[in-house]
Length: 403
Image (cartoon, rainbow, N blue to C red; front, side, top):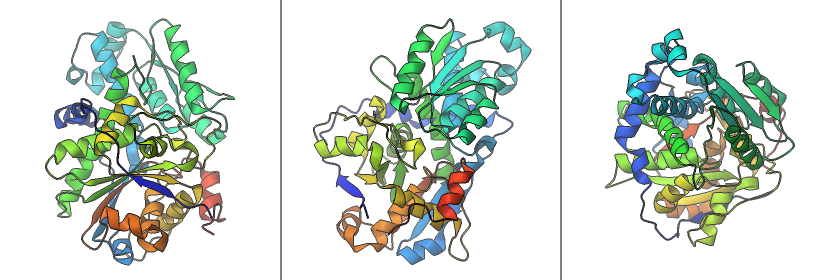
């Protein structure tokens, strides 16, 4: 059985200029925007107290994003806020001036016209962009990488987007979307990764993700956890990871939680960058084949990388069986804990935490992270059952067993 690979953070620090992107004032503006949507509701924070006791921890708290806007994933938070920020900038307004009622009105259509938002996705981000574009009377063009499932394709198509599955990997789809946006009148790429010359929109997407972090802080305080001691967050390009690490570092500057970054083993660009330990991001190429489709990204977001190199504590590269085990554990919880239906990219944190706490092979990692009976762990289930066939194969049929 393939084991998880891990490394503590020994990267040289940068000037840390990106941390300000995730300041509380920026996140508060994003949350106010999201609260204006009639579909908005705070997603649950599952308190897995019995699992925490079983694993020898003080608490496990899982943010359940399958309920987000009825879309089964958190991604819409980033895409919708970035689109609103783009529209606001084009109209020489502040985003706070653009209410949901105005953005969905005929008056707005007359004032702004119509743009075409291009993006690449494994499913969740593209669905969120298509959903927001549909409601704001805009166009969306979505490219999906080789191996994308028909279910996720149909979920995007139903939102009115022009969507294709290409014969290339995710990173090539990003380049394709960017090139088409360049050639299209009123075309703009809304992508949750960044590169030199393309940083404004990715930073807005990260701020949009901050809404779930802001909610989680309030929910933790309701159960008398003033600050999580550890946060396990998954990473594809690293936008969510950078968002979470940035937000909590700004929130608790004197005593931040320990941050554990988890990737799919087939696309572990951040882990490889951390192992190299020279500060330069590494790229993983090829098909990036993994059950964790939402994490199948081989090129890091440069904004997030700068935040992570300065503030992450540990990077872990995860085989597919780790996520599969996490899915089964959450689907069949200990008596008294709530059930969480978590998809392949959502459940990896549960699988990782179980390995660290129960497998002697990770005893050194457990010690270095200081995980024990006084630890209060926050994790994010970033998606629900977005591919029912695959979910049943894993949870019912035992696909990707642990031995």
